[in-house]
Length: 109
Image 1 (cartoon, rainbow, N blue to C red):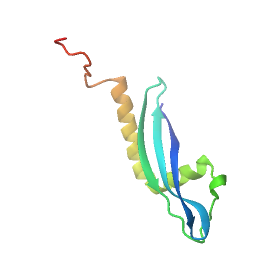
Image 2 (cartoon, rainbow, N blue to C red):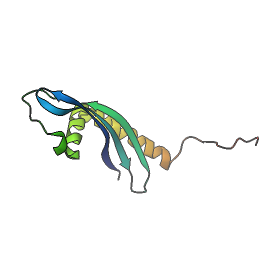
Image 3 (tube, helix red, strand yellow):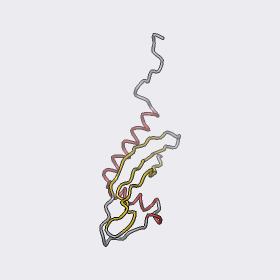
Image 4 (cartoon, helix red, strand yellow):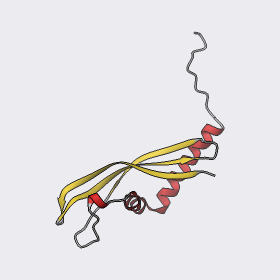
C-alpha cells in the first residue's frame, strides 16, 4: 500500500488585496508517495489561489497546512489528483521493477 502526502515549500502573497493583508495567490507544492518497502515517487507543481472580497478569509499567520492543502486539492480537482497519483505509482513501479538500465561506467573504461 502506498501512502501519499503533500508538502508546501512556498506561499506567494499579495501585500494587500480586496481589503485584506498578505493574501496568498500561489502555492508551490510536492505530492509524494511512499510504498511499504520505502520506494517513493513525487511530483512538484504550483497552484493558483484566488481570494474574492466577501469570501471567508484566513489571516496568513493563522494558516494551517490543512487550509493550504484544501486550496490546492480544490484547485487541482479529483481527476488531476488521480492522474498525479497514477504518475507517482508509475515512478514507484519503475524503482521496484526497473525497465531501464542506467550505465554510469562506460564499457570501454
